[in-house]
Length: 106
Image (cartoon, rainbow, N blue to C red):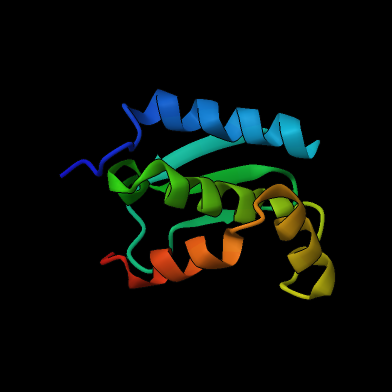
């Protein structure tokens, strides 16, 4: 079931990744979608982003949180103070989105 204001298709989601990468100033070398049972996404240090296909069913605001979260890891590898500062700079309501994502059924 598609969430309201969600993604039209995988190309739409990949386009959002590129848009955010440009805004943040990071390079994403590859974007893959696949079924991931335990997480929404992962990113390697060389810019290979893997997104859970279930993101296609989420509201765009939650998908954007996942995208920005992963891309910020290219700037700050852990979830420390620097990471949180970048998250606040790019998505001021990131904590609310994170909470909403945690309550979403995966």
